[in-house]
Amino acid sequence: MRTDQVIIFDTTLRDGEQALKASLTVKEKLQIAFALERLGVDVMEVGFPVSSRGDFESVQTIAKHIKNSRVCGLSRAIDKDIDVAAEALRVAEAFRIHTFIATSALHVEAKLKKTFDDVVDMAINAVKRARRYTDDVEFSCEDAGRTGVDNICRVVEAAIKAGATTVNIPDTVGYCLPMEYGNIIANVMNRVPNIDKAIVSVHCHNDLGMATANSLTAIQNGARQIECTINGIGERAGNTALEEVVMAIKTRQDLFAIDTRINTKEIHRVSQMVSQLCNMPIQPNKAIVGSNAFAHSSGIHQDGMVKNKNTYEILSPESIGLKKEKLNLTARSGRAAVKNHMEAMGYQESEYDLDKLYTAFLTLADKKGQVFDYDLEALAFIDMQQGDEDRLHLDVITSQMMSHLPASAFVQVELDGKKYSEVSNGGNGPVDAVFNAILKITQIDLVMLNYNLTAKGEGAEALGQVDIVVEHSGRRFHGVGLATDIVEASARALIHAINAIYRSQQVADIKSSKVAN
Image (cartoon, rainbow, N blue to C red):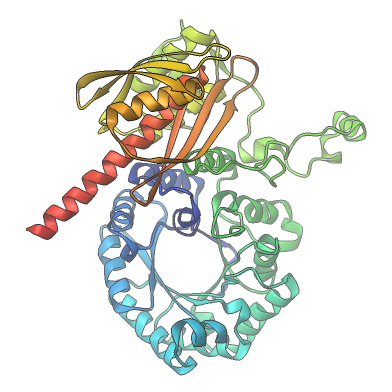
């Protein structure tokens, strides 16, 4: 089945999310799903419902709210997986079940302990079972990049005959080179007799840095769906980056003569959101969305840019939604001005709490005078990560450190509506002292795995953002805090992580209660 449009299948919330240091909350996943919907992705794979109760609930929540993109859930070629995926997705207006089984000799023999005939039978049964729930079924041959072409063609033909409407030929471990991968796709297109009844999809990993090149080569050989993630996040070295394949297709229309329905002016904003919520910084030299992607430092390049931008710029910053102007507000700016600035940056009021954002804005404006667009966006991102049900809130914080003396801190928090305070002496520094005080109050036992400080904005008055990853009871939790003061930002990050721990405990208690009843 050929189309004049490439279907963009985004798996940020499945393949991308499973590679993060700490899992996203349902609220964070929903925020990303809304952003992907505005971006214009055709299909979003939002989880692996059978893997956990949390994944099931997040898939179900997203399926309930997304209207303009098709929501997809992953399942192994196992009856229970497929049934659970269908149960999570059935609240959607339209959904896809994506079922897979390994096909390479290495996986079939070493992992599955089966024969290839068994694999084909399992694929057929899985597709038929998925078709009971939806007419949109995708079948994937895991590790197709290392599977013999004869076997790929055989299982693909069988899957289509069983009812698969999309067949995916993934380079699961990033093994293939472009010419090699293109030949695999060409063979599938030419040798599978019923290939006209399905869309051929590709899912490439970046272990050898070939994910984008392989995906584009596949398109030139007849594939019409690319599976990708924002910023290329994913297992190991990551997946094909959505922004790279989309802008390559758009920029090189002379070669591809096809397009996507992606609204490219949303790319920068979605990229920043995913980076923030997933705690995955973007490398400065990352194609399309890196901070250096449109920077020109060479004198020769700068001279050329002054004379004609096309000399060294093949696409404009504006084409991905990167605005050059820096909007600014002051403490005298009203709620309407804040709302208008958010709209100018592409945010809808439903994405954030204007009351909370305005309160945070006034606090920041009093501290630093002018508030710029990047400040406002950073505050909005933090709001996206905070929950109304948070039990723990920061009230007062002071810290002190003198040369050759231990640091000390006083912290007052509100926990479940009651005020608690604690003094900590003997910390290795002010941040350590504040952390010790908070942990004394909450009595939470955790291990700090990662602490990262970044500046959000420019100049001496830039906001400091602290990201931490902590471990509690064998699980990892991400915390983020934002403030003009590093110690305060650190305290807010720890409180954010502790609230995530509290929420996980509440979910576990509810699950235990249901089991007991």
